[in-house]
Image 1 (cartoon, rainbow, N blue to C red):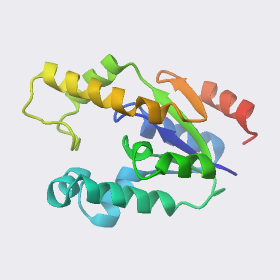
Image 2: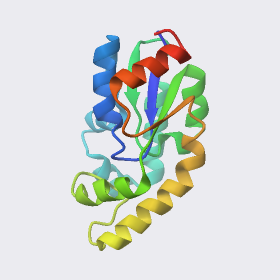
Image 3: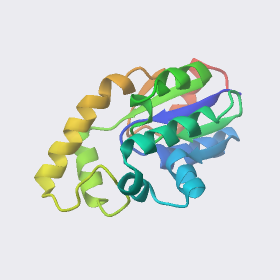
Image 4: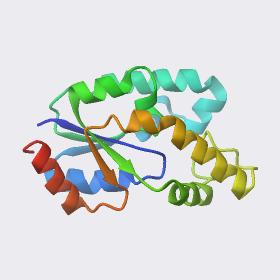
Length: 172
């Protein structure tokens, strides 16, 4: 069966929803950031600080292209994956993409609270207002890439609602 790629901003719920979705579909689940961390034996933040963003984006590209079509996988992509290296084209050609569109203000609050949780593009020394402004800017820059997804859903969607939508899109 086709792979399902979850795209959206960090803290949009891709991993949480993805695990539950995979369980319900009897698919396997992969979190791309966790897979990269395991392979590199470094956190995403360490990769960014030691080797730079360009190196990390290449790791994402290599990891993404390592997924074969029709592996019955739910894949939680990193927040920037669809925005670099023609990755969204690869995703759309090799599976079904779902954009988890969480309100940017909710995202900002979640990300500000999770600043210590391995978020390389956030400056942990900034004020809450500066972090929120940075998140909003990143969201606006990425939105057109995210909106290319096959299915766009509100970030509050339940797994049962998502299963129904997927069934309308492709029989899984």
